[in-house]
Image (tube, helix red, strand yellow):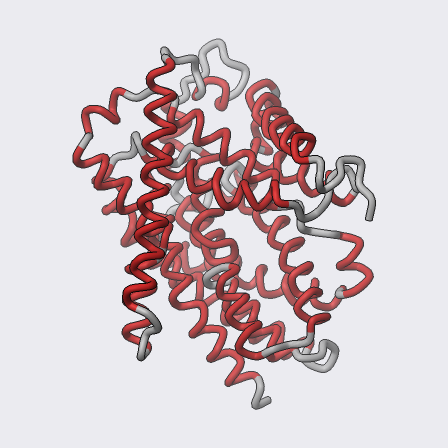
Length: 404
């Protein structure tokens, strides 16, 4: 379908992404209604609206570049000033609520399957795909497609339903962090810390108060970007070398171990933390890294909603849309209930849900957008576990449901 900015208009698409991210940030800092909604949600809505009104295409190399280069570069930039002790402290708690949330995904898939099995073809395969991807990420979705070979129409329809519902789910999770309904019922230590750090004074919003002007020189920007690029390069190259060296795992234990050892985002987090330990004083002096990383993440939020076509889901897969909604709602309700029972914070619950459905990068992006600095590293580490467990959950779901 023809769009106002064509897929081959690279500079035009970059201009749109940069403007959309900028508008989101400016609105968040200038207006209370936008601050309550959050810049991340505004960016998601702009991306969703732009593709569904045919302003920009749903899939281009520019969006791929954001996933492949902008997001990885943003991660070290946002970790340069984190408290390393807090990362190790929070990782255990996040892992626990993440695994509990994964159980919610399994329950959701089973309930949705029994409710809709007579109306959707190949639902056992769809259940494996959704169960795997909503524990890990896109790589697990692809693995289930390759393993069970559903028809192309089912794969396409499931992908569209997944993209649309996931975008709406991200918006809901981000909004939950600012809703009194949830803040009154769950502890919110990271939200309170962010608000305390951002003493409003003359600022119009908390966001504007938090992002006060700093003394940033050219050297800071140069070192920040170069260091981030170096860390990404080392991590991704190491990941490729390790995968080539160890080859195909022979059993489940090896697959789990190699999956953890060779994951590029886990290696990126590890290398960044090692750099912070070795050069703590130098990184502490850098200014501007957080600003650069946060702006990059806003670009990501614009892009993440773009593949979601409302028209296609209505035309081709309305029942798959309902299936995915049921899975997500049960995941959310289950995680809230178990989180309340075991006294997890609202921030931990929100990030666990996000990491299950969208993977570690989207969860880290949410933490960044909300100013939860000490949770960025932990959720990146914990979310990677889903890549390991996702294929097993998808496989077990298929084995169980295909017999019914």
